[in-house]
Length: 460
Image (cartoon, rainbow, N blue to C red):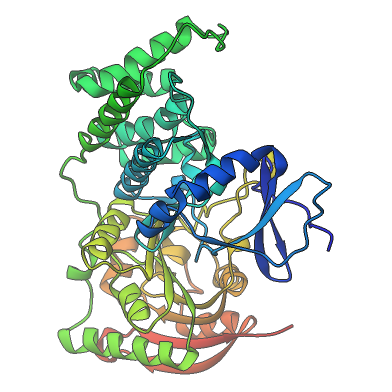
């Protein structure tokens, strides 16, 4: 069998790459990594990390390997339910991923290995659980060696967490424009001086940035700069303390209490919940995208029915609350992500395809678009036709709610602007969506004036 080309996201490691064949995912391990791989699997480190949920498991594939070539082994790793990126994570997700990375490093040292990189992209979430997906991230530890991934860890984890906590949650999006990590000097310029009162941040960000600038271009092969193992463990403990010391200030967004301010009576709210549940049962989805999920009330219905639910919202505080709620309930069928549908995650990185767009990671079986259309059509001036077209690209079935102009939330949107939306009505909504979807079911939500629709995407 001829091994396929690497996935667009798997080309940076000379020791191997991930490829897809016949709908299955494989990882090629080159001969150059054979000794490290043997140590990983024979030392007990692999079994320990998999047992703790810190490393994605794999099995040996049945692909024939040419022993005279460069291939040492072909693995078949477990699939990640949904690939997500650091710039889509909430504060607590990034913090959990950082702590998982440090735990991986600490346990690896116990077995005579070390992480050769600390990229946030090597961590993926199985619902609420962060796990390392790169089996080739480990190398045999050489006594006296410093942690080569120290700078990368600070750029990928510590710097964005500090910026989110001390400046603004929305600065997590800097990791999208700096996919190799936020430069430490930039982070230090943006952070307020009071951040230096945190001794761990002073050491690992501010002083680190100064030393980095001072010794930029200097040789990194100076064998006299040894770091005893105890000092290395101290560094990891110090980084862990730094991560744990960063907390979000108490704050509240415009939408984090949305469920408490809407046009539903108690009875109508209950009818909406039961109708959405019934519509989900009719589509029997394995995957659900909940667009504009807020704090995830309806995501939980989909998850309870067994669907892997990607819970999307533009408000980082709502996503933060959603993730913490899922973590408190150990719910691994919900993955909350910060995604703005008016500017969804694009394809970026090398050749504009190293990191996939939201559309490329779909379509899901069923999409939920509840109490959302009026925000897109009125607050963001997106015509119904364009909204319908977008949803046809990302979901096979759609459960969507139409909100009339008489609704309190629409009135709120129009209170500060001229109403130029003469085409915003139920009839036009149905007409435009019918070009992309077949309307299967329509359920009015009584006195609210809102209507729930179940739609199936038309096949061309």
